[in-house]
Each structure stands twice: as structure tokens, then as C-alpha cells.
Length: 251
Image 1 (cartoon, rainbow, N blue to C red):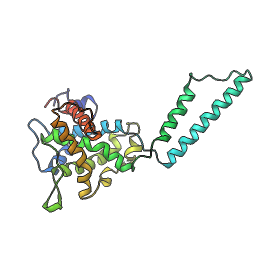
Image 2 (image 1 turned 120 degrees about the vertical axis):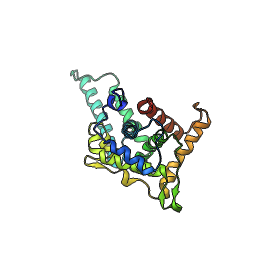
Image 3 (image 1 turned 120 degrees about the horizontal axis):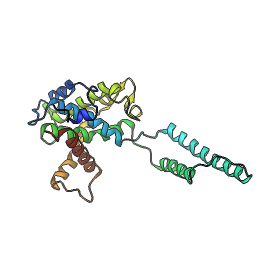
Image 4 (image 1 turned 135 degrees about the vertical axis):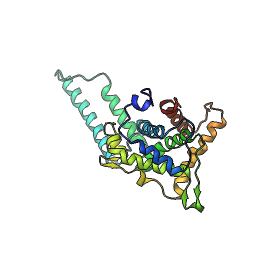
């Protein structure tokens, strides 16, 4: 591939071996689309991970919520003390206008938001549309969610998703070393836990189906964005377009 390859431009080489793409393809027992290579698949997974992380926000658990409440109280106390000192004619440090008020409001907004879904569920829901879009771009076929052998063996899409999770876990410590927030979102510095957290059996199919159905709605609209587009459709559209532009535009 040439130096114009997006993986080189984005500095993705070295995070994950090309063999990762090969293993993902082999897991599906499918044939890649014309012009697509295992290197495209590997680069697509690297890009998918970065794009998904950019959209994630760390879940606010009970401990984090307590720290936010403490910070808001500290801000209010600071503002009160500074105001009192200014009234005494003491020249105290001036913060940018309304910065204290804005900080307090932003913290309040975070505290008012309902608790996020379980950490593992939230992370997977951000990655699913990228995994499925990568499957479609790699094999030029719509993702599905079915099993072989009366439910005893994953079908091609499910196998692809599971292998993608394994590859991300294997590359975690180096791939996300310099990505802000990635450790908090995906696991500790010694490796990820994505593959372990994937639903077992039919639960994975049910988790993927909303995005697969949404993909069908997008195609039925002939590529036009719908006014009432579902969050799943929007996520799939975004994932597909980003990966196509970054990795598959030269195919």
C-alpha cells in the first residue's frame, strides 16, 4: 500500500499486527470484497477504536459523583471567600468573568444526568456500530446476526465482532497508551476486558440487532438522513462514513 494509506497518516502502524486483520477474516469464513485486504481490516479496526473512544465519556459512578459534589461545594466556598475579601478592599486574584459560575453550572449538569448504564454495556454500545460497519466495508455485504449449527456456532458477523474484541484487548496496552481517557474507559494499563465482557450466546445477537435494523433503515432511505433518525441509525451512519473515508476510500 502507498504512503497515502490512512493508517500511515494517522500513525496507526505498530499498534496492531496485520495478522489481526487476517484472524478477523478467518473467523468469519468469508471472502473479502474485491480490492480489500487484511491490512484494510486491521487499519479499520484501529480507526474504529479511536473514533469510538472519541465519542465516549467516562461513566459517572457513585465515587465520581461524590467528588463532583465536593468540587461544587469547594467552588461555592471559594467564591464566597473571595467576595468577602474584596469587600474588605483586599486585592485577591481575579478569575475570568463568570468562570466560577460556569464551572458550577457544568458540574450541576453532570450531577443532574441520570446514571449511565453499566460500564461494559456503555462501552460496547459505542463500539458495536463500528464493528458492524467495518464488517460491511470489508466484505461488501450487510451484517447479520445468526448462528450456525442450531445456535451452537457464531455466524460470520458475530464471529467477526468477537474476534475484533479479542484483537483490541491484545493491542490495548500499546494502542491506547497515549489516548486521553482510554484507560478509564476500556480497562487497566495491562490490557482491556472487552472480549470478556461481550454477551454470551443469543445475548450478543440481541445486542447487535438494533444497529443491524438501523442499517437497513438507512439503506431504505437511499442514503438521505431522516428527520426522525434513530440513535442507532445515526451511530451506524457515522461509523460507516468515517471508516469508508479514512480506510476504504482507496479501494
